[in-house]
Structure formats: C-alpha cells, structure tokens
Amino acid sequence: MSRFRHLISIDDLSKDDIEYILKKADEFLEIAIKKKKLNLLEGKVLANLFYEPSTRTRMSFEVAMKRLGGDVINMGSVEATSIAKGESLADTIRVVENYADCIVLRHYREGAARFAAEISEVPIINAGDGAGQHPTQTLLDLYTIKRESKLERLKIALIGDLKYSRTIHSLVKALSLFNAEIYLVSPPSLRLPEDLMESAKCVETDLKQAIEEADVLYVTRIQKERFPDEEEYRKVAGSYKITAEMLRNSKAIVMHPLPRVDEISYDVDNLKNAIYFKQAFYGVPVRMAILSEVMG
Ligand code: NCD
Image (cartoon, rainbow, N blue to C red):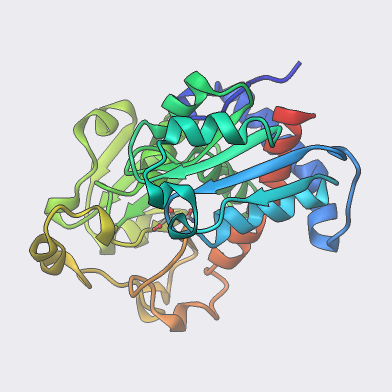
C-alpha cells in the first residue's frame, strides 16, 4: 500500500511520510548518478500535463520515470493541443487518465491540482499550481538540505519573492515540521503571506544578517508572471542580488529552485557554497521515490 495516492500539497504529508520519501530517494541516488535503469515501473505510463513553462520539473519527472523502467507521454505546449480550441481541464483529465497510470500536472490556476485529483481515476502529482504549492520541489529541497547541510536545528533564510513563490509556500510548511528557524528577506511588497508566517518560526530581517546567521540561503526569482500589474513588477525587479563578495566569509550553502534571472550573480557559481545545480539533479532520485510510491 502506498502512503499517499495523490500528491497535491505538502500538507498531505506527515513528517514521517517526508522522512520516508527522503530515505527512499537515497536508495535511488546511485542509479540516478550512474544514469542506469531499473524495471520497477515497467509497463507503466506517466503523462506530463504542463500548462505553464517548465524545464527541470518536466524533464526530471521524465528521466525519473525512465530510470524506473516506465514510459512517458507529454502533452506538449498548450498552443499545440486542444486546450487552444477551448477544452476544459476536466475533459483533458478524463481523456488522459485512460492513457496513463499517473498524471503530473502544472497549471497556472491555484487549486487546479486539487480539482484534478477529485475527478481523476489515476494519481495526480502537483507540479505547481499558480502561486499555490509545489510539493515535489519541496521534497527535493529537503533532500538537498539533508545531504548538504542538516535538517534538524536548521537556520534557513528565504530570500526574494516570498509572496508569489509556490516553492516557498510549500517549503515553509515543511520546515515547520522540522522546527527550523526561518529568516525572511524580501522587498516589502513581496512579504510572506500572514498565515504562512504564523505557521512556522519566522523572523523578518535583512540580507546582511541572513547571510551571517543562516546555514542555508534559499534564493528565489521574482515571479514576474504572477503580478497583476507590470508597473508593480518594475518597482521590485532587480531589487536584490547575491554576489560572491557578499559570501566571502560565509559557510552558508546557496540554494535556488531555478530558473535564475539576476538574483544570484554568476560569480557565485564557482564557490563551494553554490549548490543549486546539484539541487536540480537531486530532483531525479526524489521524483523516482515519489513515482515508485504512487505507482509501485
Ligand atoms: C519554480 C516554479 O516553477 O515554481 N521552478 C521550478 O519548478 N524549479 C520556480 C520559479 O519558476 O521561479
């Protein structure tokens, strides 16, 4: 029996479930590093339904499924499908559930994944719903923290667009289960939503103090596409940037869900602190763990 049928929000998982997935990811790490293949999900098909752009999430789900011996079908870009003709999400789900054993869904509307799970005959994995949640990113973030830093008594700074970043929303909820101390650094108009601030041990601070105190700096892109108003975006664009100079005396590891725009300067890439590309790689063993749990 699997521990969960759908994966929609990090709230659907207990601390024990999360630790179980992270342990399972360890079992797949070697396969992912060596680019080998198992036959655990032979005969199974995963459908990728992405209504928003994606590089890492879509491709790492695809490679995770293939490393488990399964097959993948991709909807392709929205413009090339019947969605462009006006097909509803509900109708698309009802069609694709008959083609595949599991659906990975990314959608611009908050709540879309929950809605899909209510009508789908096959498991739905939320790969991001608007500014809502991105639970599989959080699992790979936690895996990265566990391997490269520590999950217990963690001090972590969340930097950037804390209002619209779904990776942040999921991560704060998960970090509260591990009792992390969270430093929040953002432009005033992009503060973390109040309910999330209350759900964990959060303090608002500035970049300098965050760099001095934290074990992990988790940097985010300003989510341009979520702003109702272009002018509001322009006011905050380029308002923070981590440089190698700022990290000169810091042991903190630097994470980023990627894509980066200009919030981490390229001279950080060569520092030992920079682990965002490794973080993106950890998406493979973690998503192998999730897929084998849901379909195994
Ligand atoms: C993030 C997303 O889509 O929410 N990307 C990702 O999945 N790694 C972050 C972002 O787009 O800024």
